[in-house]
Every structure is written in C-alpha cells, then in structure tokens.
Amino acid sequence: MFNNDDIHTALRAVKGPDGVASLADSGALSGVNIRDGKVFVTISIEPEQAAAAEPVRLAAEQAIKAIPGVGVVMVALTSERAPATRSGSREESTSSHAPVPSSGLDRVKKIIAVASGKGGVGKSTTAANLAIGLTRLGQKVGLLDADVFGPSLPRLFGVSDKPELADDGKMLAPVEKFGVKLMSIGFLVEDDAAIVWRGPMVMSAMTQLLREVAWGDLDVLVVDMPPGTGDVQLTMAQNASLAGAVIVSTPQDLALIDARRGIAMFKQVHVPILGLFENMSYFLCPHCGGRSEIFSHGGARAEAAKFEVPFLGEAPLDMSIRRGSDEGLPIMVSAPESEQARPYLALAEMVKEALAQEMRATARKPKIVIG
Image 1 (cartoon, rainbow, N blue to C red):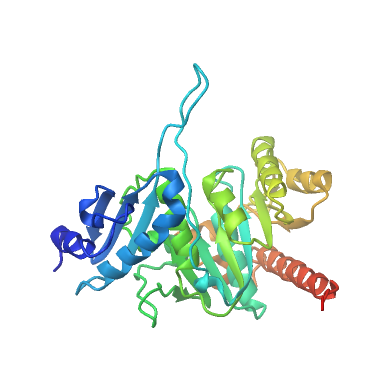
Image 2: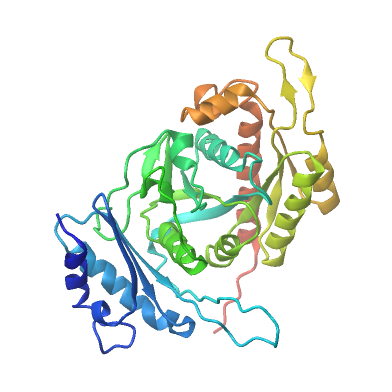
C-alpha cells in the first residue's frame, strides 16, 4: 500500500508553481490526505497565480494516479492572503480559481440548480425527487450534490458505493441508481468525517466534481445547492452556465425572507428563475385525514406572484416522504403513483417544459453570417 512518502516522491517529478523547484520541495503543498486508496492534496498559491497553476494541478493529479494502488485523486488549489484594507477595516481572505477543462460537461444539454435561502426546507429531498421525476418523463438525468459540508445524496439514494475511474482513466465515473447518475463529495469521505476546508479548497473541489466527472449524455444535470447565497452558489452560477434555478421554501415568513435572497442572487448573476416550490406546505393526519397548515400555507405562491416567477407547486409534510428519504427510497421510487409523489412529478413536468421552451426560443433566434 502506498503512503505519504510515495506521494511526495511522485510529486518530485512535477514542477511547482515557481517553475523551478519540484512541487514536493516548493513549500506549496499544504495538505496530503490518504483514505481508503483515495488521495486528497491541496496546493497553496497566490491568488494571481491561479491560471498559471492549473497545469501544475493537472500534472500533480496524473503523477499521483500513476502510483500503483491509487484510486480516486483530488488535487485542489487554495489561495489566501490579506489584501490591503482601509484603516480599521477587517482583513478578509481572497481567492481565485483557474479555468478547468469542461470535458465532463461536453454532452450535458442543460444544468439547473435546486436552491434555498436557508437549510432545513427539504431542498435535497426536492432535488432527488425532481431528478427521478425527470427520468420518468424520459429524460437522461444526473444529480450533483454541491453541499460539501453536509452532503445528503448518499443517504437519500441509499448509496454506499465509491465512484471508480471512468474508462479514460482520468475522470470519475458517476454512481448510477434509479436511472440517475450521481456524484457527491459524500461518496469520497467517510460518513462521520468532518470536512474542514476553507473557501478556495471548496471551490476547487466543487469545480472538479462538476467538470471532471464523466457524466456522458445527459438532458439535464440537476445541482443540489447548499443553502444560502455564498461562494458555491456564485461559482456554479458563473461557471456552470446554469439554464435556470428552482427555489425551494417552506411557507412561513422566516423561510420566505431567505428565499427572496436566493431569487435576488440568481437574478443578479442572470440565471433564469424556473419557479418557486413550496415544501412542507401542509400536514395530513394519517389517522383522521385532517389537514393542518403547521408552517402557515400559501406563502411561496404569494412570493412567486410578487416576483412574477412561476409557482411550481406544493408538497406536504408527510411521514412517508421522510421515511423514504431516510431509507434511501425517495417517494418517487417507493410510491410513484401516490398522492405524496404527485407534486414532484408535476414539478418535473413543469421544469421539463420550461427547459424545452428555452431551447425553442434559442432555436428561433436569427443567426447572422458575415462574409
């Protein structure tokens, strides 16, 4: 079995960011972590070196992959420095990220985000059932879990398999279940492992999970965003050519305030809002059938009207949905014809139609030929 010394030996054949010393001896290596045949390496650079350091990162990946016994390799660039600030102001770290090859996305037609302004509103459950719903409508679908610090896709789909290398030996092959191609940082780390990464490391890892996965032919890649409006959301919006975003919220005012921020963020970076989906909209008692609007009701519909975006439906707070999510059987798999699954299938139908309308509108645009 290989160890840290083998990693350093391999990296001595790679020139560091300065182009003179080897990467192993340059002082730029800020972390080497080996777990179950998987290797995670971070390279520290100055922010302005990001573009020039990308070939170094790729060369380091190839050198490590050549070590016998190595499976998955993830090399991330990280950069931190204190910029000049006004007197008395707080210094903050800045980061920059190099462009990376888009080969993994070359055959992906559309990428959409499922986002929320805050956690705990059922965004990941919605993303999982949306992805499965799209497959039931004949779409080829992938699902990327972009929540590095709290990945939930492995549990939602009941997947414990580790991704293997694709046939080209360079990219990761997504795990496939229920007809959906899946990728998550949760496949690469242990369930109880804490991912203690700074922002630049997260951005570099997410870019790799997006672009260095052999997604193959997909009609739609659904990205389950982390909650909030931070670095991951901006990186995805700016670098992934998002075709649109589905905003998930519960009905109460506190959640809707954060949903508004999510809508504003995507509009600011010119990502179309496909619509607003209300989760945990109401509770149906399994004993008497009575309906209780625990978190109020209709708030997302009102917000959609206010922002002039489509309202994509409402899903109940239901034990069967919760139970299936915990057991790795989303409701669109365990009971696809049930009343509880109906809102997710309707959501998939509306998303599919919205993307089709966009494609038709694009096709109608006049093409100007000069010469």
